[in-house]
Image 1 (cartoon, rainbow, N blue to C red):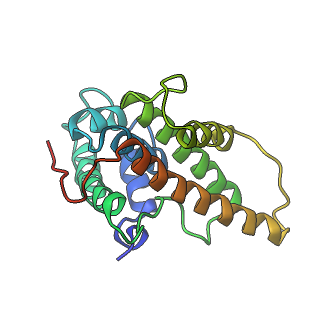
Image 2: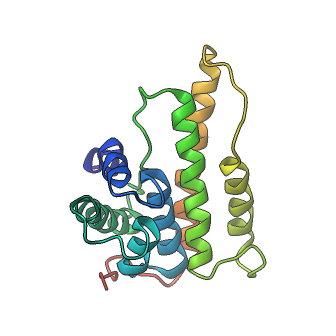
Length: 189
């Protein structure tokens, strides 16, 4: 089962908006992947606090969001560590407007970079060259505002190529930053 089928972007996005969360579904997933890549696993309490905001756990909307996020956490750890490279980025569905999907991809990359920083990986941190290059590329992808022609089918193909590049880059970062990391050793704190 791929992550896209298991986790519904729109459902999580709606839940996070209802909970007045600090970030949306794409950025939340990127943040999680970044922290997990840097640290091998994430303590869910700080991750949830970054997403929902400090002290925002009592409302029904926040609790519903937390349940969805906990499921996302468990599935993401599994997909980051499986040998089938099954990780899928949590982004809007393919029939959503390209502008929305592109914006969400930028937010995903922004979240990933923030997650790396929270895990102690910084641009000047002496990480492997591949990771430094990926961080630079993700910074470029996260930059807002680029022009495109919505009627140009090459734009759609380019978007799909970038999504695949990001997906594979995340798996590479995870491997490069955690070379002794054995699959199945993660656990929730």
